[in-house]
Length: 244
Image (tube, rainbow, N blue to C red; front, side, top):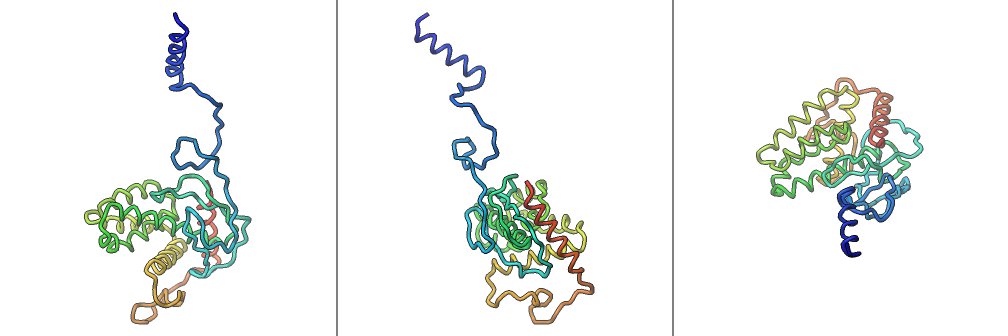
């Protein structure tokens, strides 16, 4: 047997054992990659300033004025990495010393943007606008719950909004109705804020307008949730979002 044949046999046997001959020892570490082949540099989680305005990979919503709650001290919340389909990936992309309300608004806005982009790839623009409010509610629910089954159904329905658009609203209503009053209260405020920012209302954001009709008549609920309970709910939601 010649030396050339020996080299070919050695290379072939390496493929049978491992699929390829490893050139370097692999190191198992949690990284975020673009192509998924491990060729990129390891991602290092960056720290954000409290007053940051724009960052790659997220839609920053640093305001906490969209709902009344007590300020909750924190040592830095993790900002989850959301992929192009709006899904939680189990990785963190930033550490942010922010108000929990800012994290909730940022994560929700990021998922909403990803979902609308996904819908525009598969539907005409006027169809997406028609179902935009239902899409906002669905994205906000997923941000609050991390319910993978729910999100898989939303992504499937959103590929054909003309046929399945109404099912998105029904599914969001079905799942969110199982929450308690405090969580539904925060959920409704988050939806209202996201819709207001998306539609670019003419007048500035005013929380007093939340319980009012289009004609300016106030719609005051019978019993408002306790501020302490709302603050606890917001804190729990923010810490749940920041966990891997």
